[in-house]
Length: 81
Image 1 (tube, rainbow, N blue to C red):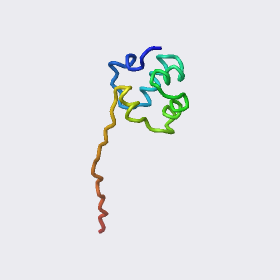
Image 2: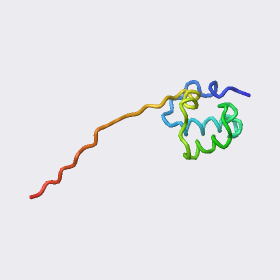
Image 3: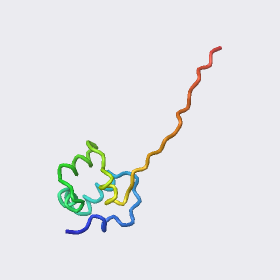
Image 4: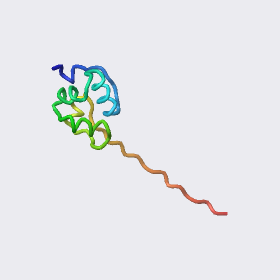
């Protein structure tokens, strides 16, 4: 079994779902990709279909990390004449 980390060495992908789909495409099946990541096929399917979020462990295996960005919302003021 090929190591999942070795397949995605130079990828720069901000979306873990895209990375997972690319891994599945490279390995041929969700089963092979799940085995390479050390997760169940059901969990892999949930990740790809957006039913669950990637854990930090899975993100690390994909050479990604979780980044939280906070921004200020603009307050819209209504102008009355």
